[in-house]
Length: 378
Image 1 (tube, rainbow, N blue to C red):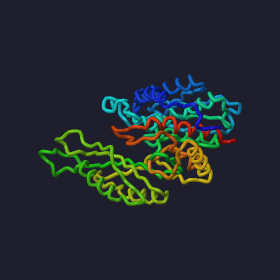
Image 2: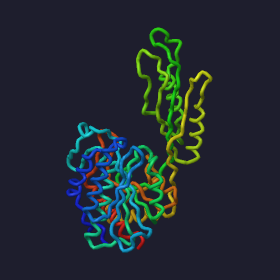
Image 3: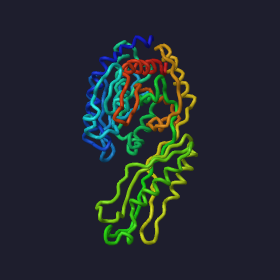
């Protein structure tokens, strides 16, 4: 198959993607994520997919599982794994509206990763329009909690991946003409400072401020960052009344390491902060969700070589690397399944009010995915 002939047009694709971007879907807003799930499901049904809406984890949005008709349906095939939740709160469209200037287009979640999901489903349909039947059946799984570490959907992703031979992840490309063949290990921690109450005006010294304690611990924790393991504290809450010495302050910490042993070493260091005194004051550290390190297997590198050859046919030479931002590819890669990540659109500044993509990459990266689907298993 001539991959350059795959009928994908960036100008048409950006029109469809606009609807997805303007359907805001922050992780913690279930009704919004449910609307995004329904929109994606309807679009995939219109393209010929068989679609199932799967209830999401407790309190979170729905997920979508879609399969394209295939004579070998039910046999191990190719799983395309993506997520429909974003980090952008409702109302971000007012500050970051969908807008275009030449080859650049902005919008919340357009790069991470609505653009990638959109081109993946478009690639499947484009092959069908060409009369090209993929050697293996294709399943698309869109989940709803990736941006908070996939605490509820991990088991679903791993179960679906285990039914397949290959996994493609259309997360955004980390740089132009790149794909991802590994990801760092990641852990999250809940931090709680426990103080002692008093009146902040009449008896300040009688109390112990949980906010002050958290501020000091934050600096100590972040200062543990080195080249092998990082620590970043955020999402802080503390106190309720300014005239009361705060007794509780909470925060979250994200830790990332290139190797599992480095993350484990970091876990030991942060857990050493866990300490409670007899009077009830103290500092509590609780380990939360984790992503295992994913190191490229022979199967992953074989996928990369295929992608690189297809990229050359499309006019660009793909590089690869292990990347720091986590994804659900961590799970499938750690399972030993051939996994290729970072197959999505080219863009920059994800998770910011400047998140944008290169419109032309909708077609070029879509053709890359189509080329992989057309030959995997052949």
